[in-house]
Image (tube, rainbow, N blue to C red; front, side, top):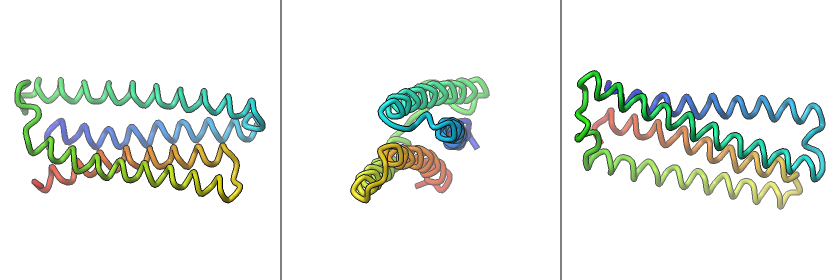
Length: 148
C-alpha cells in the first residue's frame, strides 16, 4: 500500500475525528442552551467556521505528510505522483462527493420545510458534507486498490 493510499484512509479518518469533535462541542453548547435564539445562530456560524478551518488545516497537514513520506521512502518520485488513472479516479469520486453534498442540502431544505429549527437544518447540511468527504476518500482508496 502506497503512502498516497494510506493518505486517503487517514483523510477519511481525519474527517470523522474532526466531525466528532464538532458534534461534541455542539452537544455541550446545546446542553448549556447557547444555541437558542439569534445569538445561537451567530455562535453556530462561528462553530462552523472553526470546523472548516480545522478540517482544511488537518487535511493539508495529512496530505503534505503523505506526499513527503511517499517520496522519502522511494515509493513514488516527486514528478510521478499523479497520473491519468489517478485523475480519473479523483473525478469519479468527486461526482459522488457532489451528489452527497447535494443530498445534505436537500435534507436541510426538507427539515426547514417540516418546521425543524435552523440549527438542525444547518447540521444536516454539514452531515452531508462530512459524509461526502469520507466517501470521496474511501472511494479513491477502493478504486485505486482495485485498479479501476
